[in-house]
Image (cartoon, rainbow, N blue to C red; front, side):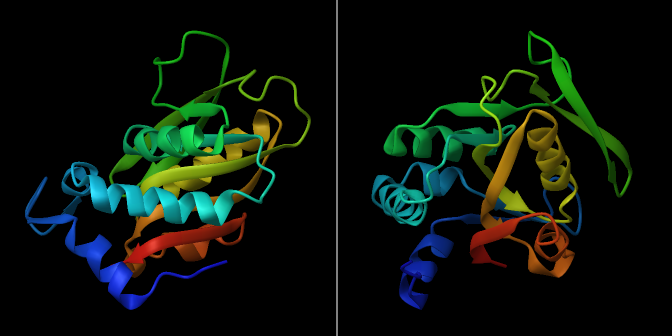
Length: 182
């Protein structure tokens, strides 16, 4: 599997806008909209991800609301795979599994359709989101994939905020890959 060079990582990193003190004081927000509207860099990123995952014999790609939807859906189109959304509560119209998880300031929930993997036993699933911080949403998403009958082969993130420790926690559940570490 080809690894990104430092120059390639630099190009990707520089395409992401850094917004200090958003959404609140002390937070450094990584804005991926600038990467998304740079067709050359976006195309490079998608080529890299499709090369990484093309031979993994995946059945589905699951994306976590909302920015994970963007990368998951685009990669699904490149790899000719179905997309499964993992959403906030009350957004999916059919029977769902729900997983509640801890936040630093309370709890939140995510949901998946119970029939997301169309009764394919042990469906091989890639989980994608734009960013991993503390890992709460990702671990809850992995639990939902399992409840729905899937097996997460790997979880993938464009950005890993390594000082928050989410990737380390996640590696207990499945393989994890981040394109960029901040």
